[in-house]
Length: 343
Image 1 (cartoon, one colour):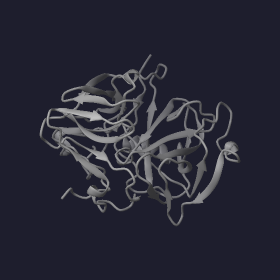
Image 2 (cartoon, one colour):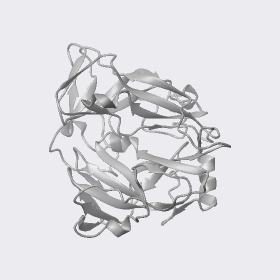
Image 3 (tube, helix red, strand yellow):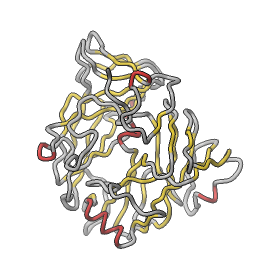
Image 4 (cartoon, rainbow, N blue to C red):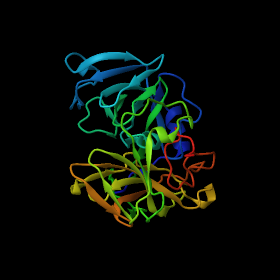
């Protein structure tokens, strides 16, 4: 069997030209990334009682009625999606995948860093964020703000999609290599941030305009340890410098999900060129989104908490991550682009 290879930006544009990807409104000029494409919110949000999967041969739209849907929200003038609620929003992109192309979706980095949980569903879906070869139909984004309420509008981008094309064999998910990722929790230095409860609304279009002190508490442990409080959300950084070469992309995965005491990295796509010296990265750190679960749990400096899984590109992208500007290229410990500098 052969591994399905990730399509590069120029191949994604070919998919657009060939009608494999279509749009309800004209695409944005910067929507296509080196190994992924941003997905845009449509004009309506459905407030749900609970999350769901439609199941085989069932259309998402057929499920959107009472009692599952509590009410509809027009996003056109802007609307606040509130903490602790579940919303479903049709996306502006539609897929017409051939039989040799599958897809996977993931929250964008800026979405994960503000603790907004998202996942994509499709008609007939039996799993989130996974789109089978040959799928034809629309995309829907489930949105659940966990810590901060957010102001959204049509066209806002909270998730992204990667396309994979198989070779002569069947599609597999076999990685080419992986890298263990550990925590940087050196004593008496700034090692991360803990989100504040009951903070104000975050406007997703106000880049750099939110004072981080209103939303975050800085963490400077004295002994190289950090105790995670159950249910709290943290931004931490990797000890390792990450470099994604032009011929590969990567995705972050938990190192041991069976531990159950914390979850690491909600937004896991890393594009070719991240941390790559030739694209101005010079070994960027991975920013880790961590949520405590169940009981208090001690994390220590150098503790391995995640794994970076590398996958081959079908082609080198025409533009590497960071080569045309990025908020996170060459990053150390860094909050979402929505926040200004910590003064």
